Amino acid sequence: MASCISAAISCQLLRQTRRHLYHKSSSSPFLKLGKSFSGQAHIANINTTKKDVLNQIEERLLADASAKHLFLGTCRYYNHKVDDRFVVVDLGDQLNGSSLDISPQCLIDTSLPPNDIEELKKSVPKLARCASFYVGEIDGYFHQPWQFGYALEPVFTVFTTSGIQFVVQTMANDKIMFIQKGACRGQSISLADIKSVRIEVSDDPWSSRYLILKMKDSDVSKEIIEDSRIELNAESKRDLATLMIETEWLVTVAAHLSIAATVAANRKVPLQLADVLTSRGNPWVEMRNTSWINNSNTT
Image (cartoon, rainbow, N blue to C red; front, side, top):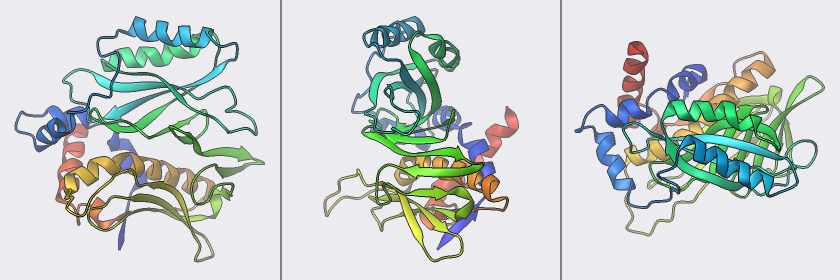
C-alpha cells in the first residue's frame, strides 16, 4: 500500500540536507554509508576551478557551429566537507520545437564549492552559442555514475544519458507531457487528467523503481519512468538506507510532477510512495526527515 505525502513539503526540504546528514558527525551512519560507495571514481577534473569549467565549456561550444542547449545539475550525498558534485551536459541543438531526438554529452563531471556553482549558473548562459540553459539535479550520489537528470526551467524536462525521457510543454493553455522513452513512448498526457503520482519499487532487494501515473476517471495507470539499472545475483543483499538514497532523485521528480499536476488540474494530485520509501516502512526515512526538519529550523 502506498502512503500519500505532501509534495510541496518534500520538494522544499529535499535540497537542504545533503551536507547536514552527511557531515553532521564522524559517527553519522550516512557518513559510513558514503564511504562504502566511494570506491569507484567516476568524477573527472577533480582539481578543476570555476574558470577551468567555463573555459572547457566554451571550447566545446566553439568547436561546433551550432548553438547548444546546456544543463547544469548537482548531485546529493557527495563525500566532501566543502564541495558539491555537479555536471554540465550538452543537450544538443534540437531540444526546442518538435524535435526532441537528442544525444546528451556530458562535458563536465566535477566538484566545486556551492558558491562557485551558483556563479556558474549565472555565467554559463552568457557564453557564446549557449542557446538555452537548464538547471536541476542528476540522480548520481557520492561517486556513482548518473543516468537521469531533471530541470524545471525553461520547461519541466527529464532526460537520460541516451536522450529525453519526457518534457512538459504548454499547448493552448494546457500542460502536456510528451513522452519520448519507456513503456509510454510516443504518448502525450494532459497534466490535468492525472489523478495521482506514485513511486513503486520491486520486491526485496528492490532492484527496480518506477514512476507511475494514475489517470482520472479510469483505471488506467501509465509507467513514465523505469529505473532498473541495478544488477543483482541470487545472493545479493541490499539495505533500506541504500534504497532510500538511490530513490531520492526519482521521488523528487515525482513530487515536482505532483505539484505541476495539482496546479494544472486545480485540485490536489497526491504523491504516493511505496511503504519502503516512507517512515512507516523504512526507519532511515524517519532519520532523514527529522534531520531535514531540524536543519530547516536552524538555517
